[in-house]
Length: 283
Image 1 (spheres, helix red, strand yellow):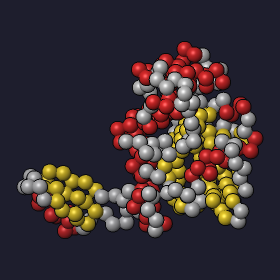
Image 2 (cartoon, rainbow, N blue to C red):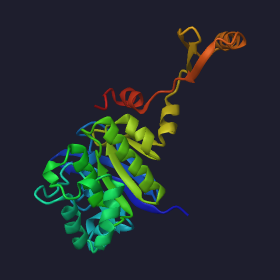
Image 3 (cartoon, rainbow, N blue to C red):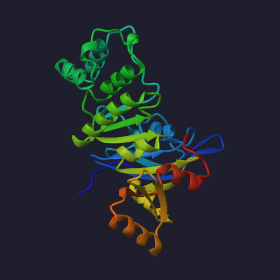
Image 4 (cartoon, rainbow, N blue to C red):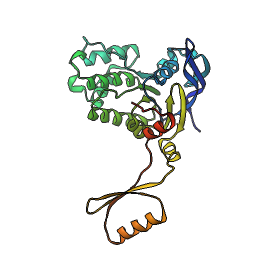
C-alpha cells in the first residue's frame, strides 16, 4: 500500500493580489524523490515554505506525514530535514561542533556525528572552522545537518545551485543512497538534467501553475510527436532521420554493410518540453 508522505491538494498562495501558486496538486510517496522543476520565481520555494509550516496557504491544503501544514509542530520537525539557500552554519564553530550543536537540539547521540562526517567526506575537516570551507563543503555540511536525525522527509531547495559539476555529482550520489534507504525527498531545481536523473516524478511549474506532472519519461514521451533517430556511421558522419519506411530501409542498408557505429532515438528533454509548453527557458 502506497504511503503519502506529502499530499498537496488545490494549493494556492497569494501575495497581495498576485498568485504565486495556483491550484497545485502533487504527492510524494515513501522512498521517492519528487521534483518541482521551474525557473526562478515559479513558486518552488514558496511551496517548500508552506509544506514546512513557514507560510500559510491562501486556499487548498497540504499534509506532511499526515499532519496539515498549518498545524505542523515539534512532532513533524523531528521527522523532517530542510536544506535551503538560507540554511546557514555557524562559521566560527568547527565542522564537528556545528553538528554537535544540532545533535543536542535534536536529541541525536554524539556518536552519530563521525559516521555522518565520513559519509559526506568532511571527516578530515572536522576541526576546521566552517568559515574556511569551500562552497561545496559548506553545502555538504548543511546536508549533513539536515540528515543527522535520520528524517523521514528531506526538503531540498536548489541543493546543487552554484556547485561545480563534480561536487554536484557527489550530492546526487548521496541523495540516491538516502532514497535507497527509504528516505522521501522533495526537491526543487531549475536543472533539467538533475530532475531527470534523480526524480521519480516531476512537476513542471511556471508562474505558480503546474503545467505538466508525471515521471520524466512519461512527460518526454508525451511530447515526442516526431520520432527521430541519430545515426553515426563508422566513417564519423552523423545523420538525423525521421521515422519512415525510407529511413528504415536506409538504416537496414547501413546495418547490412556494417557501417553503423551508434544509433539513438531523439526524445525531447524536460527542458525542451518546458520551452514548448510555456515559451520560457528553465534558466
